[in-house]
Image (cartoon, rainbow, N blue to C red):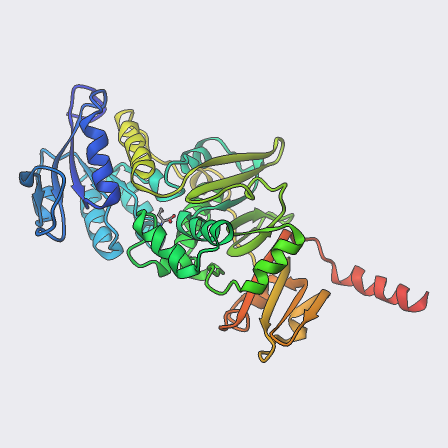
Length: 419
Ligand code: HSE
């Protein structure tokens, strides 16, 4: 019988019993209205002590995937390759699937789109982006292409938590990271958080629902927070800025989309400035309504489980992503042809070529470090590693997008020379 029928129990096969899996288990114990139960949990390490009856657990994936009475697979593991096998097998056997695995989804989105169509299966993953904030469904359902001028957001809770602890409690980077791990915010491999890869994976998924762009996450320009230097923090303090890791997707005048994840200085009047700890925040630039702001917990067991629960409940009314921007509208394309206002700081011994800047606005140096602010063409960040070297940090300035026009600048220079 269809799971649409409220009388049909959602018999869940759960993969993973980590921070999120256990939270979901606890939540479902107290949620009678959904008529759902976890029938089996597949785990990797059987020896580990778990807060649930022993008979619930198995290490045999097929005990879930081949069990016909299990009508929903919930995948909450951190191994993206294993998650891919689990999710694709389940979709092919027409079980409904809920996943939180942003990396697996981002890396296989094109194929997952095809599978959903081919097998007419339900696949929901709201918890994969910004945990508790319902950003995917909103982008998918509400924001028609013309309304959506841009998205900018803090989409990784761990890096935001680390930056907050460093700036508010003067913790070292490593101590702050250890705390993020203890709290269960960080990935098992925290490099994914601190190098900006988790944020890129989430941006990749958001691009599909916002603009119909399906892209390889590895092609998206990104940096994390590991190269932010003490002097950058001093600069931020002097100017009254905060530093955050921000994902951007912006529709440019030609209709193409600029997308990247980079650290950014934020003014106090930015809605993202006050997003602290493991919270996430997403600003939607709407064509007719100015900015709209989504805010909520972006990592952690219960916030993530809340989005999984919402997906389980959506299965009941046969909700599925239609990928409307991709299928019913003209999908947008990514572009590298735009200018950004940036700050770059580097050890005095290292050379950052002047020629990468279209315009230099400020320059300062002492015996330890130099910094420059100015305008660069985005293509300067592609296939080049001058800005990724140890000892170099690149941080976007507030209002980073600029309508820099080389011709107009040249004329202005000429006029100045002639005056
Ligand atoms: N490691 C992720 C984060 C978990 O910190 O945002 C939630 O996706």
